Image (cartoon, rainbow, N blue to C red; front, side, top):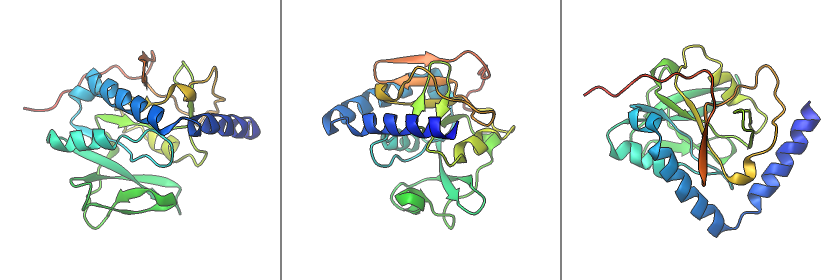
Length: 203
């Protein structure tokens, strides 16, 4: 299984890397718009996003929109010793971030309060490859699988991806958890299953 995943990961990453900067920028703008059009996005008060690296889709503009709308932005911080993510509230993308693992920008724990997974209304999940059943393959370290496995986290799991990242089938092991919604530049797929919805921001 590990060799199959590694081969698929390498193939999809090569296809993603081969996108021209112009094509990637245009597709990213389409992804921004499609995510913001989701009812789950419009209803969410506390939103867990990430900041992209290398050639992956970067939802930074979504993060700016969350802050501008007065909602709570939450970003992950990698804890390498425990191989887990902690999630912290960010109020300023310039002042609250510091260099982290693998060149990622992460919340500064001295400035950013911890947020409980149960408080999240929406999770935007990064990844490498996806299939039409919501199967997701990440970068191989399992950080998001551990976070998503927390029974307190009941928010919808959404992934925004380039068309090149959609494959016929993602190899899946018991710890590989699916997402609920796939957002592509030219469409959206809502995967039947776990999330039933039902929340709104307080007035």
